[in-house]
Each structure stands twice: as structure tokens, then as C-alpha cells.
Length: 495
Image (cartoon, rainbow, N blue to C red):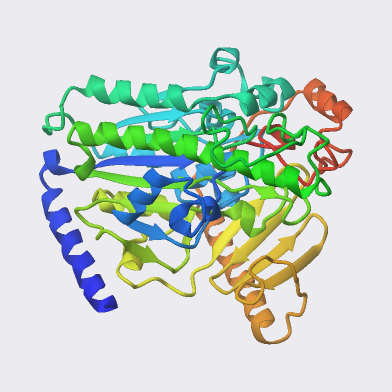
């Protein structure tokens, strides 16, 4: 069966490649990033609730990667990795005062060089062009409700501002994003007849991210009888939301989170339907992923940007392109955020980015995944200095800030509840050696990087205000409530 699947994929890729010589036949590319979407809350990943019918259909008609690991547990570095194919410590966007330097070539720039129209739509603060992520886009549209408050202002004036955090957490943006996307498609005027240049479109959907305030009927879609006082509002800052809260309160938050997923999935369906109605879907590579997950007290904390456990790093990855990807393909081998850009460029028959931190996933679709590949995830923010190296079997976490380390046997301990420090034998020795190999590769990529990160200095007054609020501790490591949680802005949380 594997050899049959491999030969089928190879044939389709060959046929697709032969067509790409004709500029009119080149595929469009749609890259969707859903903020804070956990893979284990999706039907196609085995979740028991019907949270994601449109995403699940996409998976049935394409390929689903069962084990995709993000480069970071928060938005800014992960999207820089998504756009460059480079690990976080190489592209350098590791904290709220960093931006992607112009010397790096992005996915949008490569598509633009290849003759594509490039457009992006974002709905969270850390996708703002102030962080260098707008490079290469012909148009890059801010779909937040507070766009006028921050557009044209230096990032250091608002990246750590608590009012921007609160505004972003409350924001409902999916209708605006969808309206902008559909308007852009209508403005092309080609009706799917191939008269326009192919496009690369990036769509960022925010509403899964807390606060958890799905509109009706999604607010009650998964909710049972609940008589408590906890709502999804002010999730990160509400002191009533903590690890020791009643189980019914936690379950209610999960109900609302699932409602946000279904609400967002509805808008994914609208975008896909618009492509289909215009005759564009069959010649469009559709890739859907997430920047990170989030924690609901699995390790004692809430939100993200504080740890490197599976609940914040394991994300969905689904691709659909009938010309080259057989429907219903599932890939068990490890995939990474940094692998997405090389994959999309190969499907479009464009030159890869260099230096390359990831690799195309097309061989994995053919049954040729590398069992030795390792996913590197990093966190250099909110007072943390952490790095993890993960394979299909184990994860090694180096907490450099605290001077500690641990490794986990993911087969025996998938919830990462039983750390080990024994590196002298067996799987522990393998994890140690694998970590050192990954560090050597990071050093190689770091030496080859084309530029240092750009910087934006956070004003001392803003930093002092955050510390006075207790949002950043004396060592920069604490969150709002003693914080195991994170959020979405600045040194304290993220998006």
C-alpha cells in the first residue's frame, strides 16, 4: 500500500510540475494560520465534538499531518518561522522588541519574485508589519478593530501596552477578515478563467484566541447546563481562572473554546466556498495550520508563552491540492512549522529559501518521512530562556533560564507528567545526543543567517507600568496571576 501511494503521489507531482511551465496553469497558494488552535480539539484529529467540519473536509480531500510541532508557543516567532523556514533563534524574532530584518527573504517575497500577486490579511497585533512580517506582500491588511490606534505608530509604543492586549483579546475579527478576503478575490475579476496572475494569499484568523466570547449560536453550541460565574471574558487577567478552579468552570471554558473553533471554522468554509464558486479551488494549494496551542492547566498554568509542552506546541497541518496530493492521505511522521514554506514553494515549482531550516514535506506524503528528524522549539521571552528538541519518540527540554533540563518518553508518557534527568543510558542517552546534534545544526544555520534581527526598544515607562500592574514580575518571568499563563502582548503574553 505504501509503495502504491508513493508512486501515485510521484506521478501527480510530475504531472503538476509539467503544467507549471505554462504560467497560466501555476497554482494559487492559500496559507491559513489559525491563532491558538490545538490539534486535539479538531474532529479530523480524533476529537469527539464536531468543532471543525470545514477543516475536516479539507483534510479528507488532501493530506493531514498527525504530528506537527510549532517553533514557539506564541505568535511572533512562529509566524517569522512560517514565513522564513528558519528556527526562531536564527530569524531572531524572539521577543516583543524584535522584528524580522529586511535581509531575510520571506515566503511572500519568493512568490512575488516568481510572478505571483501577494496579499495578506492579519487580525492580531503580532502580525503587524512593524514586526517585519509584511515583507513581500503587495497588500497586507490589518483587520483588527483597533488598527487605527496602532497603524503608523512605532511598535515600541504599543507592543507591551495593556490596553492593546485587552483590545486584542476582546476583538472579534473573522467577519472582517472574510469580508476583506472575498472582496480581494472579487476584485481580481478573472472568474477562474486563468487570465490573472496566480496569487499567494496569507490569511490569519484570530478569534480562537482568548478571550472566549463566541457569538450566538456558537456560545451555546457545546455548553451544557452551567450555573457558575466564570465566563470566557478577560481569560488571561481574571484571577478566578486558575488551576484550582472547580472542574465545572474549567469545562465551561473548554465549551467556549470549542465554540470559538466552530465559529472560526465557519469562516474558513466561507473562504473555501468563495474559491470554489469562482472556479479557483481546484488549482489552489490550500495549507492550514496554527501558530501555537494553549494550556488549560494541564501543567498547572493557563494560556501560552510560558512552557514548551505538547498542549502549546502541537498544531494542525492540513494541505489540499488535488493536482499533486491524493485525497485522504494521513502522514504520521513528524512535521514542523519550518517545513511549510519549503513545501509550498516546491508545490509551486519555485526556488527554495536559503538558508533552509526546514525541508519539503512532499517526500513524507509519499511514505518517505525521516524518522530521525527533530523539531526545535524555543522561548526567549517573558523572562524565559527555554529550548526543546522533539522527535517522534522523545522530547528534551533545556530550561536555560533556570539551569535545569528534563526529557520525556512520549510513547510511555504522552502527557509529559514524568520527567527524567538520566542521560547515561537508553532513551535518555539518545535524547542527549539528539539534542546536541540539533544544537550543532542551529549553530550552522545561525552562522549562515543573512542579517541580525531588527530591534524596537520598549519605553521604560511602559515597562514600569506593566511591573506596577504585576503583569511582569521583578525578573520578567511572572504573568498576571503568578502566571503560568501567557497572553498575547509584549513581555507578558502574546497573542
